[in-house]
Length: 191
Ligand SMILES: CC(C)(COP(=O)(O)OP(=O)(O)OC[C@H]1O[C@@H](n2cnc3c(N)ncnc32)[C@H](O)[C@@H]1OP(=O)(O)O)[C@@H](O)C(=O)NCCC(=O)NCCS
Image (cartoon, rainbow, N blue to C red; front, side, top):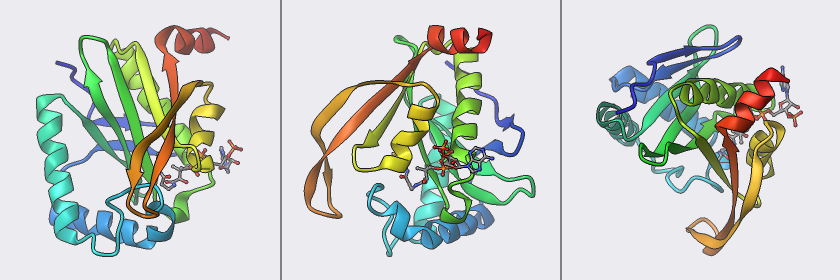
């Protein structure tokens, strides 16, 4: 089983293992609600009715999957420990040494390069732990999200056509599949 670091420190941000507490559920819920217009087109759970109980259940789920080693969900914190959003290692395959990264940021923290920084920290951690392939999937319409792997040198493998149903606009969505291999990551470190 992969044992991931509970705290990953970067220059401007820290990734901290997501754990359940009422205070954290409140902070999580506040940022979700502040950012609903930007989150709801892309994340099916981001709705007006998303409650503090939902945030608490999410955090509880994070603790359980962390214990089992099936997902590693981190809170992204700024220098003053303010909660900014989340970044997660999902769909982990120990056999294939692959995982997928998922993320969102509260709107006041966007457009400052924080998500690229967070993804770089995840790459360092998980390629360092022996992962060979990291995937980032983004809606083809979500240009800001696709910008993150594009800027970090991920390869666009293709588009999964109409692979996700979007309740928000009652349409099937096309999804970009980006990936980076450990060999590419290591090559970039040497460059
Ligand atoms: C998609 C999302 C995570 C992007 O987060 P972000 O932090 O704004 O993204 P980036 O790290 O790419 O930063 C964006 C821009 O900040 C700017 N920036 C400002 N200051 C910067 C700095 N000090 N360093 C680096 N970039 C900086 C850059 O222009 C950068 O874009 P560029 O690399 O093309 O020049 C965020 O918009 C979001 O959460 N959206 C809603 C939910 C969502 O779509 N989630 C993803 C579902 S797949």
